[in-house]
Length: 149
Image (tube, rainbow, N blue to C red; front, side, top):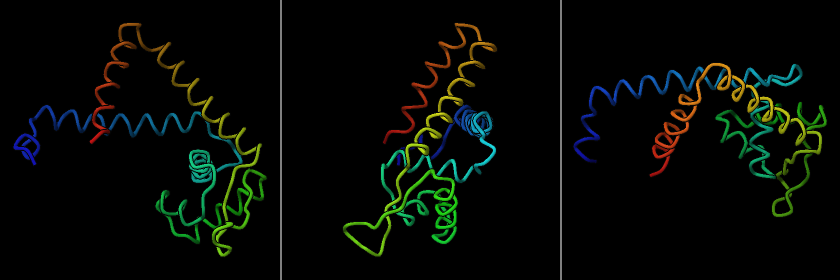
């Protein structure tokens, strides 16, 4: 570990606090912009995770969502009842089921993503100048570097 990493500057601490605070608030507001009355936040999150993986098992989903397997099984069952996911036996292990999105499930995920993108773009258009939007783009490039090892 480098010396700079062990002793961050006051500005590094301040930037850390501000980033965490704003990202947390922004994430909640973005998610709220696409709320669908018949889906819970956890159901919407599971749909998005399945989209990213194509197929998933309940155990994989539970691990990635940080919940118990039994809780995930309940969530998946509710999504299946809504016609948003299907379950089929895993060809490699008949004890497990692979969970996939239905066409309606994919449509719902895309609709939610579109709503979130439109909300944020609208906020940036209405509340920021062109120079500020360019500054946000530049800041995102800096923050993106933090996500790489």
